[in-house]
Every structure is written in structure tokens, then in C-alpha cells.
Amino acid sequence: MNFTPPTIKKFMSADWSDLEPYYQELLTRPFDAASVAAWLADWSELRKLVDETYARLQLTSFQNTADAEAEERYYYFLENLYPKLQAADQQLKEKLLASDLEPEGMRVPLMRMRAEAQIFRDANLLLQTEERKLGSQYSKITGGQNIIYQGENLTLQQAAAKMHTPERAVREQLWQLTAERQLQNRGAINDLWVQAMELRQQIAANADLPDYRAYRWQQLHRFDYTPQDSKDFFEAIAEVAVPAAQRVYARHCTRLGLDSLRPWDLEREQSTMRFPGIQAYETPEDFDTIAEDVFQQVDPELGAYFASMRREHLLDLQNRPGKSPGAFCTSFATQARPFIFMNAVGMETDVRVLLHEAGHAFHVFERSRLPYHHQWRANMEFNEVASTAMEFLAAPYLSKSHGGYFSKADAARARVQHLENTLLFWPYMAVVSAFQHWVYEHPTLSSDPAQCDAQWSALNARFMPSLDWSGLEDALATGWHRKLHIHRYPFYYIEYGLSQLGAVQIWANALNDQACALVDYRAALALGGTATIPELYAAAGVRLAFDVQTLGAAVDLLERTILELEG
Image 1 (cartoon, rainbow, N blue to C red):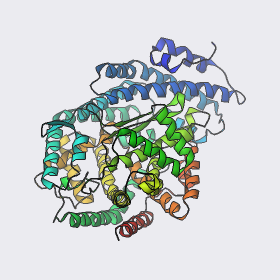
Image 2: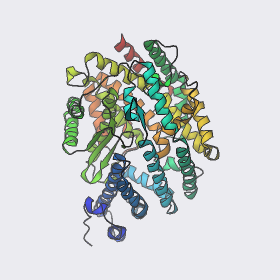
Image 3: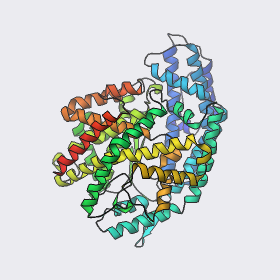
Image 4: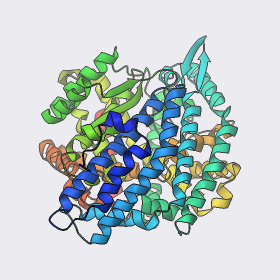
């Protein structure tokens, strides 16, 4: 057959009988050193179609969790097509690996393929589909959570925005209403958890691995560090970041005139809150327009990238009822375009979220110049450097004097809050990540949600001892219910802590020479997934680190800058 893959529109409506011939042609087509690049390019086009179909169907189901038709289309793809596409893709991986050929730029992608081939099992395809469906049910539950406050029906994101008030009684009432609503779904989320744990253990067993952590480590291509390295990082956090976080909490207590901090005195457990809240923009159009101006000042090419996203309607930024909570950047592979999804409500925190997701979007633009889809995806440990570093690189341009969002005073307040939250995040990340290590080291014990509640509470007591949860023990214990990654993307969280450390190192470089730091940053993004994690960090001018010394230097810079801004 003439190898001309269908358009994305046709691919999304195709059945397996329509798609199988393309895979069969690649599977039976011979290649050698001279022709392997053309074969790989054709396979790459198929992978783009699969990737974009998955992204579009999932995105549509997230944009309106009450859309039964969108959910049905997504589930149909997951159940009837995706497993067959994965199995066919695996056969092509095995064909390339068996050839012992290494096309240019494929050293690291081939390492990933070998790891994937080692753990691939046909028996797991349906199990993984069931796992994804459980994740969709989790998002549907959390996306449908609303509260009634003073006669107004609020999403939980809208309720959180209203908590930016100096009236402590109002904050407490909103927090309590939110917690009560979340606890109404305690049983339903526990039921999903028990089912997910059973599936994950079976997936690992099918792959002949001792536990799900070993499976996930290999699936996530973590060749460059070990579970013990992660635990060493947690210990470094306990030594230098937890005391720094306690100092942040103490200053926050003083600002509020309190003796101790309750959950409603914080934006989230891992972030402070300033009163009154800083409103970032008046209209959604302002949000987009100002962001484009900010990115133009960071780098004209980045500004052009964001402008194209606005023109091409690749942004869904505002919160609304029925929309899945959270924020992410996905991509439409056939177009080499990113798409940003988030839940903005007009506050300063929305700006930081947009900067973060835009960093992911810029990564999509930069990496998409590479010839093969197989080369595009870096490890998440570096993908999150791309996003988190943008929060720091854009910081100098957020005041209105630079065309940004804030007055000079509010820009300083927002900057301090960002730096404080950077310090507070490492202990929270340690809670989330250490919890997941415990879960999969003790799968029988952790299949009991009550044991998970107890472990989550214990880790909070170790890494976040400054918060007073007395009388709120159920809300504290079920904090793991509210961390999407635990339920939908297991073991995907330490990436945020490692990348934050990398991003602070990029910021330190930018303080000496912003232009040079940005050149290194973009050069690293352009490598996509063609380099190892340490190589990507090195290209960005920093290092992948787990030690007390590197973390301590970052903590010192953050604390010094906070004092300077507040002085």
C-alpha cells in the first residue's frame, strides 16, 4: 500500500480494521541502515495520530465532566482501540530493536524502547484501560464538587478564590464547607482506590516485577536515579527545607497576628495567602493579552509562540461548573501545537499557573523541530524544569511598569508569596512522594484506605508540623484523596521537587545573566527526549541533585531574596 496515514479527523473516527493495515505495512516492510530513517518517519506519523487522538478525547472529557457523549467517545477509544494500537506499536518497537540499528538522534529513545519492551505484556493492556477508566471516574467525582455559599453555587476553585479575604470567619466557613463537600465523596474515592491498588499489583506481577514501584520506575524511564536517591532527597528536605518552611509559617503567623495557623489561613497546605487577595486581571481577555506581553519581554520567540496559541484557540483557561479541576498542558502532535487547560478565577495564583503551563507549551514548540515523534518526550524530571523555570524567568516582567499584571507593591507581594511557596512546596512534595513509596512498599496494608489515612497524617506531622489540624483530623487524613497524581499518575510527583531545585538553579544563573540563562534554557528544551536527565539539566546550565548542599544553597537564595523584598 502507499503509506499515506489518514488525517487526524479520519483517524479519530476510524475503527481498528481501518488502522491495522498501516501497522501491518510497517511491520512487514524491510529496512536497512539506508532506509531505516524513512521507515521510522512513517512510524512517527502514526504515533502522532495516536497521541493526538488520546489527547483530544481526554481533553474534551475534562472540559465538561457532565458530557456523557464525550465520556463515551473517550471510553470507546480506551476500550476498543487504544490497547490494539499499543500492541501494534510494541511490535514495531521490537522490530526496530531487533535490527540493532541506531538512527541518528535515537540513542536515548532506544533506551526507553528497550525498557518498555521488557515490561510490555498483552495481559496488561486491558488492565491499564480499566485503570484509566478509574482515573476518569475520580476526575468526574472531583470535578462535580460544588458548595453553596450565601445562596451562590460555587466550584471549589471559586470558593478558594473567595478565601482571599482578611475576614477569618469567612475563610473558615468557606474552608469548612469545602471540606464537608469533599468528605461526602470519601467512600466513593476509597472504593476507587481499592480497585486501583488491585489492578496495579496485578500489572506489576504480569510484568514479572516484584512490586508496582519497580514497574512504574521502569515505565517512567528513571534510569538516572533510584528509589533510594528519592529517599535521600526527602532526608535533605527534612534537614534544610522543613526548618525554612517553619520560618515561613512563623512569619505568616506574625503577619496575621495569630498564635498558630489553621488550614483556612493558607491558600493550600503548601502555600501562604496574602490579604486582601491580589486580583490579577479584570477579564479573561486581559489575562491572555498581558501574558503575551510578558512572554514577549522574556523572549520574542516565546511571545510569538504564545500569540499563536491565542490565535489558534489553544487555551482553555477559565474555571466553570463541570470542568475538571487542575491545570495541565497537553499537545496535538500532528500540528506540533500545545494546548493549555486550567481553572483561572482572576487571582494572582492564576498567573503563576499560566506561567508554569506556558513553560510546558514552549517545550512542545521547541522539541517539535526534532524529526521523529519518538524523540519529543523528555523525562518528566526535566519537563517540569521547563515549566517551573518559566515562573522565575518571567518574574521580572510581572509589574505594570513592565506591561505586566501588578502594581509595584503587589508585584513585590506576589514575588514574596511565590518564593515562600517554593520553600513550602518541598516538604509537601516529600509528603506526597514518601506516601507513594510507603503505599507500594506495603501494598496489602495500603489497600486499606484507613491505613492510608494514618500514614498521610504521620507524614504531615513529620514534614509539615507547623499546621494546626486539631478537630479536623478527617480532613487532614484524607488529604491524599485530593492529590490527583496519587490516583491518576502514580509516582509522578517527585519530578516537581527535583525540577523546582533545577529551576532555582536556572534562576540563580539568570540573576547573573538572564539572557545567557534563557539561551541555555531554550537549548535544553530543544533537545526534547534525545538526552538523559543529567544531560538535559547540564544543557540548561544546572545539575540534577538530591543532596543537602545543593538544596541548601537554593533555600539560602530563596530566603535571602524574601528578606530583601520585604526589607
